Every structure is written in C-alpha cells, then in structure tokens.
Length: 375
Image (cartoon, rainbow, N blue to C red; front, side):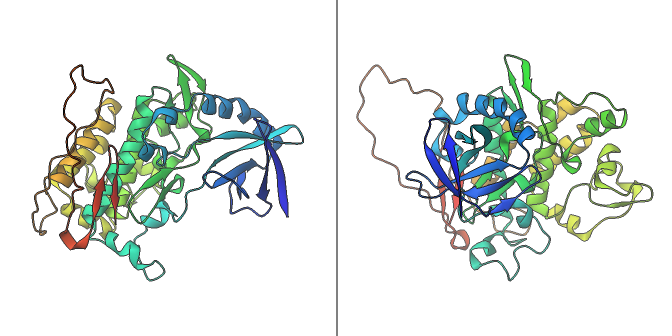
C-alpha cells in the first residue's frame, strides 16, 4: 500500500504506507520511484501540529543555506526540500535519505562496537580508535559551525538521537524542523523541542523559575555540542555520576557537577568510563574545562566552533596523539577558499595535488574543504 502525496510544485509522489521510523511528532516514509537522490517523507501525526509547522518549513526551504554550500556540508545537514500535501492539506515535507548510517546514539554506547556491528566499525574501538573519533568530532563541529555562521539558526535540540554517522566518519544532522529561526536579529520561529540532558545550566535555572524559554542564545548550542563531543570521545555523558541528592543528569548540569570539574569532590560515585579522560590530548581537555567549568555560570566563555575547529585540526594534522601512541607528523591543513574572485593575471594551471594518505593502522583519509572521510 502506498500514500499519494502532492508537492508544492504540483508533482505527484508516492510513499510507502509503512514508515521506516516513527517519532513523537510524525513518521518517516520511503518515497518511491524517485528519479533524483533517494528521498523520504516526514508526515506529521497530528494535522494541527502540521498546520502550525507549515510556515516554518516553507521559510526553511525558501532560505535554505545549502543552496551555495559545498557538497560535503550539504550531506552533513539534512534539510527540508519540498512541502507535501494530501487532500489539499499540508502534511509534511521531503528530505534526502541518508543510506548506510546509524544513529550517533548507538555509536556512543559503552559497548560500541560490539559483535552486532560489522568490521567496518572496528576502526572506532577505544582506545586505538581515538584519532578516528576526533575526526568524527571535527565533522560534527563543521556542520554546526556552518549553521551558526548563517546568522539564522540555533539547533537547540542537539543530541545524538538527531545525528547520523557512517562508517567513513561522515555525520548528518537530522530532525532540523524544530530549530530556532531568526532573521535580521528578530526571532521568527522559536525552538519547539528541548532535551534537558543536553541543555546548559541557565536553561534549567530559568525553567525552575518558570521564566520565558522562547529565545535561546548560541551558547546553548555550544554547551550541547561539547557534551556530544565528550560522548563521542568517552562513550559517557560528561555529567554522568552519582550524587547524594541529585538523581538526574539535568540536576548535575544545573549544579555544575562535571566529573572533571572543580566540584568533583561532591560526587561520590563516578563511572569508570570517565577514567579514560587522561588519554585525551591536553588541548582537547582544556576546551572541555573551558566549556563545562569556566562556562558554567559565564556562558560567553564556552568554546566556539572556530576554536574547536582549530584545535581538532592541530591534533589531527600535527600528530599530537594521546599518551602512549606513536607520534606521527601530518601535513598542514589545506586553507579554505574564502573568495571565488578570479585573479587579474592569468597563471599557469598548477598540477593537481595527490590526495594525502595516512598509512597509520591502514586507514585512508580524504580531505575536502570541510570534512574528513575515513576508509
């Protein structure tokens, strides 16, 4: 059985009736017989919720930041492509399918990768796979950095369940329709979803005081990003520990009980997974301290995406590996192209450079303008 839908352009498409995924707001259905890239359709369960989301989705499609983005970034952010209607009522939208990917939520589990995962994921096993996890961190930072630099978006509900990862280390942000959207300094659409385990101290403080939670600053995303980066590298939430009074993660966040922070002594049981923190390069540990300790009551001190980018690149290219691993020198990072303006004087075209190959542990890394791919 199929679902008959019409796009905003008047085209008729068909989607599988049985969804490939169900969520709280809607379901994801495979689009059939599509001539372009494989698509899926998100269809809301509730018509009233769909009606309220229609203007937001239309604005996102009309102002898509991916129109001029490099292909690597386009694949890193799964954006709405077209509005969908059924019986003349808005019901959802199409977006590209991300094949051969798993949710980052599975990737950050303590036993990943275990026997249920194929050999293609073994390159991420800790501690030997630490460097490859740094690459995943870098790719995630690039996607968030790109969105922030548009000046329009705060992700807000950034969490591992909303991120897909492939065996080559490439990531894709999904479920983007709940973001906070602004234009010319004015908020157009507030965020519609929050996850307390990835929200910073000020969010929980304002929530406890029943303050207005409509507007979210970039520092909210920077906290969420740092939490996820820690989970990618450590397979545990940075605030996961036992306290005599606090019984939930968001309570530890509210009170600044980061397991490696200045209030560590207040915790009476810390999971052993946190002990691997010493394996991280000191530069990475400094950024976590700056975000979780110094940035706890002073959000502006949280590490920005540019600083994460520079530090991660330094570790990846200059061979500053974790203690106990053999040091290896890597070439300097290729500069990003900041201008497409052609030079006034014609020059002889340079011979194309060969791709840099990392032979360490037999892994191959291809560098694009923005992201790394592992093979």
